[in-house]
Every structure is written in structure tokens, then in C-alpha cells.
Image 1: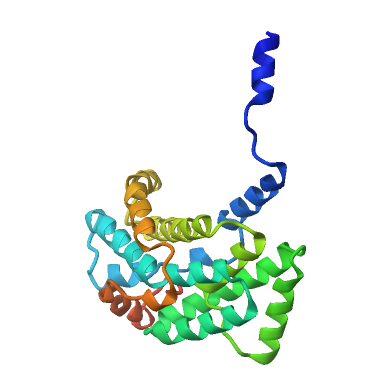
Image 2 (image 1 turned 135 degrees about the vertical axis):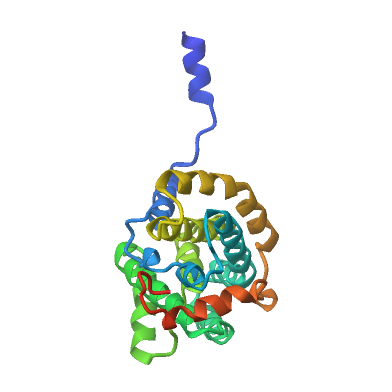
Length: 243
């Protein structure tokens, strides 16, 4: 009995300083965090109405394409911001991404989510005063538009979370949000959505590894059709989502 207790006490435990960081990480991934992610369908709604997607069979392909495009285009911005979470880096990345997002719907969606995340992070993580300072300064000057990908990397970086964790988290919320949109659009039921998310997990990890740790000079569009479809969202007669 005493030997078992001694062995248990000697087991490697995570450093106590790391545990609060895990809670912060989980909070950033929690669906109740009011960043507006569930108001956007990543072009799924437009894809349905334009018959690019005609049923559950096409949904798997569409989700994979969204993940691939997110990894190739946005992950470099997440990575760079997480490695250098400074005002100068954020300003540079924001202007670059603003020029690279070629459709107005996607650009507005990125700014809406990024602005919400910056507002929430500045209020929640009050132990990092630079977040509120940066937000106030940029709002006052109007210098940047708070695009989601660099803001996401900035927040993770300032919290002290690893860039690998940050990039994987960004891909996870992309997968989570688009499958949630598919459920509310009745493309798939709640149980089917959970099964689909589990089935795609291995492929999502492979895509993340493929595009992770890349600089913004390597950022590119891999599925231009998605950009075209999402740009049609504003012309839809009826809409449930913002993008």
C-alpha cells in the first residue's frame, strides 16, 4: 500500500504554473465565448443555395476544402502573430491579410470575428494590460481592422501558449463552426454532425501539420471556388448566416 502511494506521488505531474493556461486555452475554444463564430457559415449557406452542395455526401468534401483553404491562407497569419505578439506585427499582418482577402463577405466576416475576439480578450484577460492598450490605441487611430486570424494568434501568444497549440486550436474552431452551421442548415443532424467531426479529425490534423509553422510569405488560396461561392452570400434572397 505504502509502495503504491509512493509511486503515485513520484509520478510526473504538470507544472502548476501551466494549469491556469490550460483553462484559458479551453475558454478560448468554448462555444459560449461571445466572438460571433456561430453567425458565420464559411460560405456553406451560399454553397447550398447555389447547388454546389446538394446533400450530406458533398458536405464532407466541402468541410475538407474549407480546412485546406484555412490552413494555406490563414494559418501563417495565426502562426506569425503567436510567435511575435506585438502591436507592430499585428498592424503589418492585418494590412497584409486585408489585401489578400479578395471577397467582401469574407473580409467583413474576418473583421467581425476578430473585433469581437479582441474586445472579449481585452476584458477577460485583464492580467495582460497590453491587450486593452493595443485595442484602445488601434480603435482611436483607426489604423487596423482587427482581422480574426492575427488577433487569434496575438491573444494566444500574449497568454504564453505554444504556437503549435494555437494553430491547432484555430483549425479546430473552424471545423467546429462549419459543422455547427451545417447542423442549423439541416444538411446533417446533430448526431451525424458529431460523427462527421470525428471522422474528419485525422484529416484535419494532417492538414494542420501540412500548413503549420509557415511564414505569411507562403500564405495562399488553394480552393478559389470557395472564395467565389462565399462572395455570392450577399446576393442570396434569404439568409440565416452573416457569411
